[in-house]
Length: 404
Image (cartoon, rainbow, N blue to C red; front, side, top):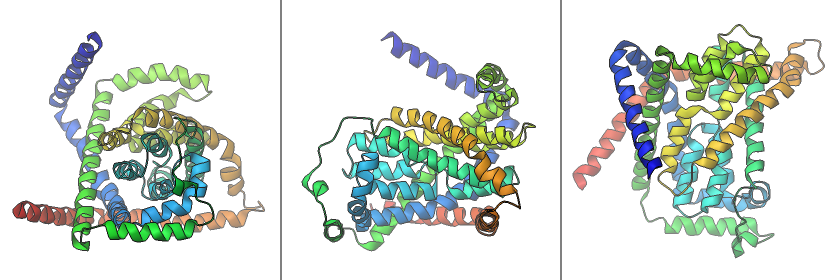
């Protein structure tokens, strides 16, 4: 009872202080809000919307169950999740935060996952997409496409390590007869695909409309969190709370032989990935230390993304604590992998006389001619895509209200 009252007082006090800070610093809050809005409507919305819509259609047509049966022999032994987890994993890596949580929650709602399986799955299927790592961080902040290779490998290997660790979480589930089936996975996958399509009673137009509205509603929620934490992070800096925390955090950095100048960027990164990575790139420390902190920030993914995930998981019985614990593990593993891979994936590739110089040329071509122009085009046409999509959403939503 006392703990509940203390929690009430703490929440009420925090909300009041936030309101006072907004009133005290209206211009700074507005600027931070604009920055968060710019990131959302230029990049986040147009990059995630196609993945969200397509994934809803794939689930509706039974393709996800088809993939699940085929991937059962791989996902079950490695990560103790059903084969449908393979679809969530791939889509989460391709589309970025918080797609893994959205797909996991959707599959849990359809009873394709148990609660423990969903908690294990969500821990390693949320990742930053390659476009953000190469375009925003490597090129936009560090002006060095090749650091994107190091960050991406450390980030995605770290996610795999988290999945292998989290496989020991939770009790062992009993497999049903279909999951025990051996040697007939493809035939079983086809049968499952056909039955799922027959059980889907919605016509294609209704299915597509539901996919669009559901995806845009999720992205509106994501945009709200991005703007909120952008403002919150700025207010913490204005009232010198970030600086106070960074002083305490500097002692922790000393234990890991890291420069104390990285304490403030790390604090910012704990709240929001983009700002933390940007501040890290602006420090005067060596590039290796910058990469270690940036990898940790990417792995931890910031309270902003975690709040988005918590909001999505709240619609199910999937608990948030395992995900938060996994983000801490991911941050440390990614930072450690960055230290180990620094020489083979960065220093060695910088040497023109190295025998693997052809690998360097390949990576330079891939990042500079593929992802970087894609990022630049996203910045230019992203707002237009967002506005058109929102207009379509308003039209579909209004039409449904009129019918009802």
